[in-house]
Every structure is written in structure tokens, then in C-alpha cells.
Length: 111
Image 1 (cartoon, rainbow, N blue to C red):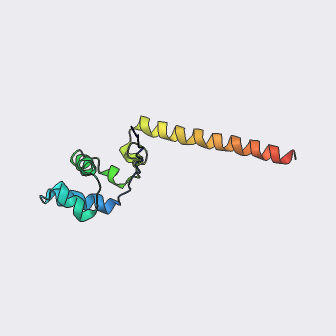
Image 2: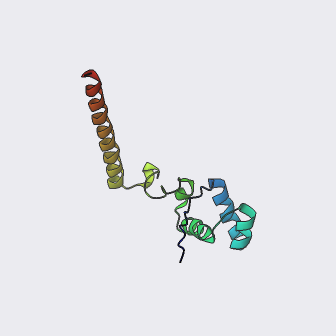
Image 3: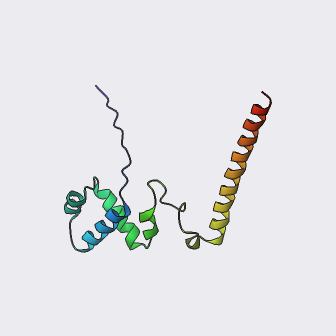
């Protein structure tokens, strides 16, 4: 028995394609017609975008692939606690970068 590995790559669709998909779907086009017209590879993608549209999560249409969660939301769309957590994460990352920079700088000055 031969096993084959199948590697899937994420496809990035521009925001304009996502909005056009929603427009065509609302106009009564089928998923197959939309896929052929716009070059979309999977009908599940259409369903996902429509779900985001119907549930008011349209901000997700403009986000990068795999970043379609709270990251990248406008700060006004996040609760105060979410804003503070995001800011805390950003500051912790900055501190880690500065620590690494200081370590590198010390190692260079010792040479």
C-alpha cells in the first residue's frame, strides 16, 4: 500500500473577491457558479464568508489568512479587557526583543 502525503497551502483571496462572492450569493448564484466565475477553490470558503457576513463579523473579511480572530480587529471592536490583554501581549513582546538585543550587544562588546 502506498501512502501519499498531500500538502495543502492556504489561499489568500483579496477582500474584493470576498465581497463580490457575498454580492453574487445574495443575487441567487450557486456556489458552483461563483467558484467558476471568481476562481474560488472550495465551497466551504463561500459558506464561511457568508456566515461572517450574516453574523456581522465583516471585519474578518479584511484580515489576513489565519489572523481572522481578535487579532487585527479595530480596537473599538474589542472590549476593554481584550484591549488590555492585547496591549499587554504587545508590550511583553517588545520587552523580549529588547532583552535579546541587549544580549547580542553585550556579546559583541566583549569581543
